[in-house]
Length: 61
Figure 1 (cartoon, helix red, strand yellow):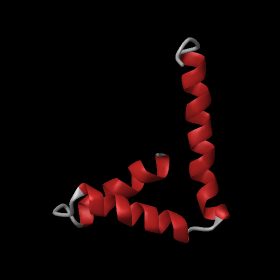
Figure 2 (tube, helix red, strand yellow):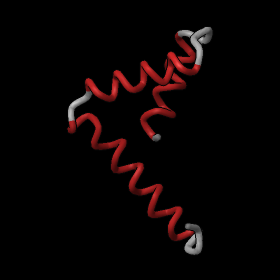
Figure 3 (cartoon, rainbow, N blue to C red):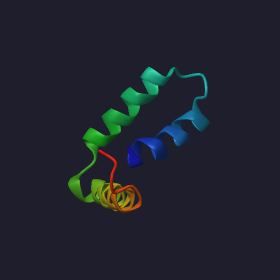
Figure 4 (cartoon, rainbow, N blue to C red):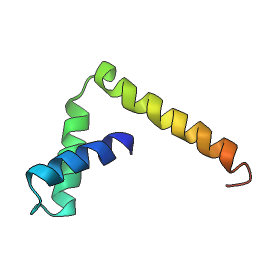
């Protein structure tokens, strides 16, 4: 989700007319082309946010 949120903003700025489905496809295609090393910062941030949420809302299931 972290990557998708960042990438979506970039795509919308470049092509505001694109439907959401096409933007999602672009994001997915770019993610698949990225190496594990390129993906790592996004995965780490996602994990950090997950842990933060768990601390803030311990009873959330």
